[in-house]
Image (tube, rainbow, N blue to C red; front, side, top):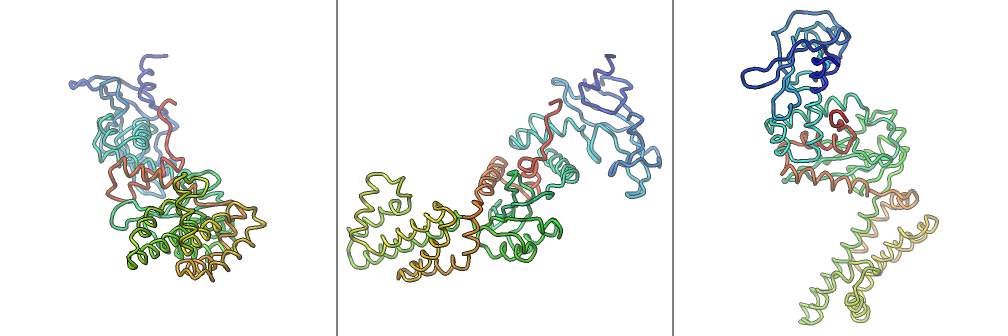
Length: 411
């Protein structure tokens, strides 16, 4: 291999011809190159071959991968071309993205590091500013999303929201259940945001959606019915059981308040300590909690009835789908006449969601994948100590969990 070609390989400059290598007074390595004949006179945006417009503003430098502790730069002419679509733009170069001051290998490494470490750490390691890391992440994400259609082939999806900042700042996220990837995210938690996703999906691909998992929020359910009439909505089991647990705790607090008002401090103390005994699943109770539950069974019928209602509803997701219809209908009938206001209200809520609950049992679909992804997104927020804008978080999330992150250079 010719010695001058070694520099092209060290800097990852593909599709270019190395003309010269110099070291300036600051000890920086300057590699002068020109695009290969196949890469000349192409639009910087669409990369179509175009007629040359002029010589541009002279030579330009791009920061390349460091050579040990030494800065390295790629230098070349930057002519402009006249594209039929985009007008007069700077010609594309094979070693860098359009409107960037860094080579592709440099940006790919920055992005890979940013998805696995804080921006401050990446900035210190790569010797760039914190804001430069953010702009590189946004540029690489935008290019990747133009190249890959993440909404293609969706059949089973999950929709949920996540808080990314104080002050009721939410993102709506959509996850593909078949691949586990984040396929869409946008700022907001309302009907308009969900409709924006279906607009991006398109009418034809909306018809291909078979199953959608979500909670019971109306701002999600309404657009699903409108845009995907053939899709089956599966109500997330976790949210169903969470509502039952909240109803149970409401009964426990009411019984506790009644005991306090009646001056029965001993019973009030026992009820306050019984919270985890009635919350936990029976198979996970400690011996002390089992004793406490037995005392509740003997001394407090309303609270124990609420506990049995919660456990009976939990069994809905343990039985075969063929038995689920009868079990749910029986539970609804029991809850309506149980004389516990919180469970009577819950029965009315679950009756309205009956079809979605049974669909989740039949298809075995929940929002567990989406909740797992939300945990990963919270880790991104925590590692960054928050984001100034939702777009910055979305770009990093799409790179990390949308399958858009580039490989490390040379891998």
